[in-house]
Length: 186
Image 1 (cartoon, one colour):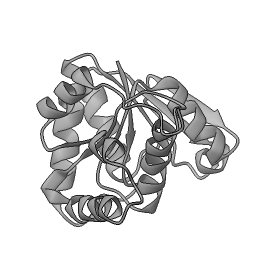
Image 2 (cartoon, one colour):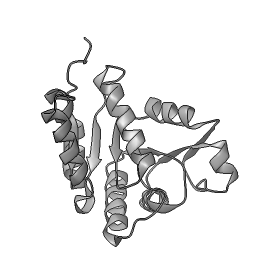
Image 3 (cartoon, helix red, strand yellow):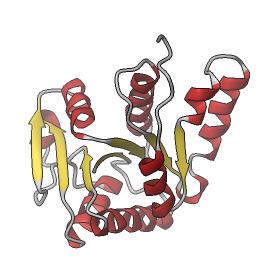
Image 4 (cartoon, one colour):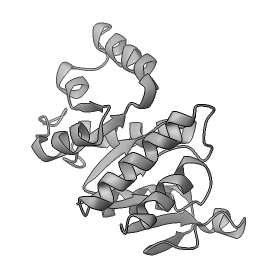
């Protein structure tokens, strides 16, 4: 299994974010789960890649030429794809991955997980989309998603399809038992 990880290019101001990312990466490596991510050596992205590598796991990076040129690319990955732009980067990550998970991060992290969630809703893929909720980081977002449902903008199956996990074991179990909802426009 290959899991696309979306997370911060910064470490955040809570050391538990780094600890949680490292624990998840180590768990994935132990379970022979490969990680596909943005290819950077900075922030939580770099921490995740380093922990995977240290645990003997495979890490596939997908980075834009623009970011590689700024010497942000991680030098020790199993494989690194260098692409022209962010659209190609996201498409390549989606192609390579069997599942998607957002760890703590900023606007890029949200943009990436929301895009693949949207793609699932309209039937472009049937892969699980998840939030790894370290220290309750995504609790306010979950409140907003529930509000979108209550206001009639998101139907229940598409709220329910989002995996909300706090432990590596719960995340993997949810991936293994995931069943995609019917396509929105089927």
